[in-house]
Structure formats: C-alpha cells, structure tokens
Length: 150
Picture 1 (spheres, rainbow, N blue to C red):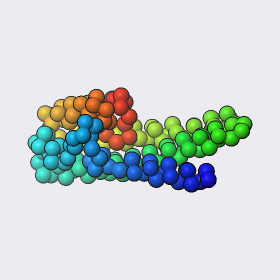
Picture 2 (picture 1 turned 45 degrees about the vertical axis):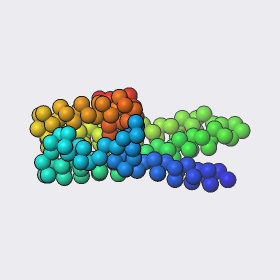
Picture 3 (picture 1 turned 30 degrees about the horizontal axis):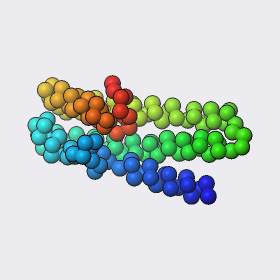
C-alpha cells in the first residue's frame, strides 16, 4: 500500500514539474513565448538562445524536484512508523541541501548566460519580469519558490 501511495505522489509531482510555459500563470493568464519575445524585443537569435537556456533549466529542475520529493517521501515514510528514528530522518534530510544548492547554482548560471545574450535594457526588463512573476505567486524561474528572490 505504501508503494502505491509513493508512486501516486511521484506521478503527481512529475505532472507538476512540467515546463512552466505549459502551465497557466496565477491569475488565469498565460505568458507564452511570443509575449516574452515581444516584451523584451528579442532578435530571433536571442529568442532561440534564451528559449534553449530556459528549457534546459526547466528539465534539470524537474528532475531535481522529483529527487526532493523522493526525499520528502522517505521522511514521511519514516514518520508513519510507530517509533520514527530521528537520526534516520536527519540523515535523510541532509540529502536535500546538495540538491537545493545545485538548483540555485543552475538558476544563477542560467541568469548569467541570459545576461550575456541580452542588451542592458533587455536585461533590466528580464529582471523586472522575473520579479513581477515572483510577486504574483509564480516563481519567475523553475525551482524557485515564491519569495525566494535573488
């Protein structure tokens, strides 16, 4: 029974980890690729490069989110035991930190790569858009929870 629940949770988390551009932004609207291209006035070359960077990050973050969910499920599995072992829970939770650091570093690297592609004006607009998305309850970028700004 536990394995069925764990598999169901993993499947649900996988669905939620799908690329942000295929999910509605909070408020019911969607911010599509065309909107980003138009708002930043991207050249076709810039658009291709930014799109590739964002998609690669989304895929990587989706896998890391699944890893984090597995860790959380391991903790939950230990917690439902009659006598949960706090030392074991601590050891399980220690696996989270390296994954979170990797996620943050990947996001920073992506930002630095995008900064190289965009003009100064485009970069300022990009940062403003990411901040606005974060404030709306979105994250701006995959792997970031609301309120986790830079």
